Image 1: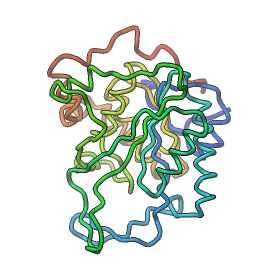
Image 2: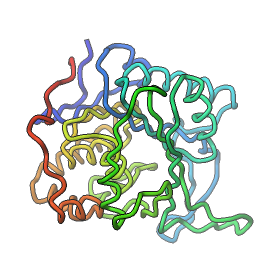
Image 3: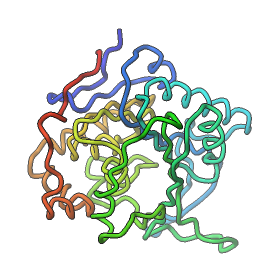
Image 4: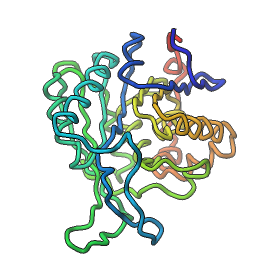
Length: 291
């Protein structure tokens, strides 16, 4: 029987400690949406700039590169388990760079997913390229795919249009990297900004949806989900990141922080101004995890 590492009093935020491939095999619950930020396999001694200082880009043993065959096998294993935990009309979002995203795209297609878009996240404040030998790395890619080619998926087209000045939302998102106010509980080395995850949640789920993140890290996915009335399960092998995650959840349990965060996330603030984020009672939290 699975024992949660942490579960919030409102049961909207649950964390599991361990290997996602092994843990996902142990239950049959299915999710409305999955966001995955798997290892990029780029911790091989490179350098970058943070806050004006030269720093090593190595994130930890979990991010060290391997052979192409190893990376393909790893991606195939976790994607297969995630597919089993996704509803037939569910979608998966996977973020990456050129280090891993081509492997992921091939394996998603191999396993029957239909790729809907490849989002280009153009960072408005990227770190400089200190080698001056190639273009500055200022983008990441996020693949959006649905489980079945023939089963319709959730896409909140009108919501995306509302936050894009009445125009169709494109697949290029100009959004900032993580802000200082998002790091008050500590920082994960690959932490994603709430602006990115809030848009993903808004685009592809309804209120009350269940969202899975198999490589949860600091659980930005879960914080965005809870700020928008969705429920969340996150999995990670590193206990220090689960501690960070639960502290972030406790932070937004304070109504002042909850309200402040919603105001700071542009997409949410715009929709709140228009009164378009009303949660329908029949949508909210009508089914629960089996543990």
